[in-house]
Length: 261
Image (cartoon, rainbow, N blue to C red):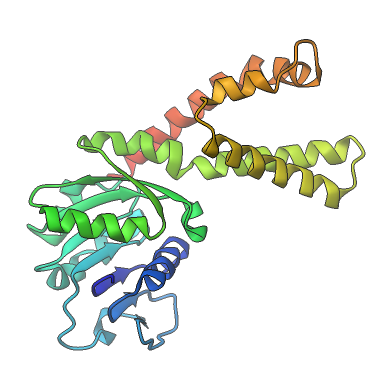
């Protein structure tokens, strides 16, 4: 059972997390999002503002799922609800010190999940700040395991490249599927079949990678026959792709650091 939480931000990631918590069993909780119409619920009531939160509501955890650009205005009013709670932030770039500067001397865990959380296949990396007890860390682990796999790091600076690799990573995979589909159509394959081929190939390859103990390079070599069709394609991709991926992740890492403000 997940204890009462206050979820600030009820967009795609906040909604995905809430759905996972409901599946595990969720004590009466509140989500606040001005963009969503208020709605009462047996487990999670959605409020349009903090003024609509029931009097006496005391969450065990406050989850920050607002856009990082909104932090300066959205976080300070949450401070009264953070007393006695652990703060779990999934805002990209916003540092533990910066969050504590807006909320006060509260225990903060910073985490970066990714969008496969919507189907409980997310990957989240978390880092605990000062004053986070073992109990608070365990609660955050449970909150994050509701949407997938969780790993912890001691060095907060690692969360910037983590954001670049796994937080932004699904977009890279979607781009690959998008380009495969487009290229298939260019080769004369009907659009519906092109989409099916691209999506199932990417999804199947990902499932095989997840199930295999071999590393990605070994799996790539195994499917690449010398002088075959795969080798012809990889000769083109390998000329530019590895460097482009490295530069892309470096750019995303820099942007994550910039979001700290």
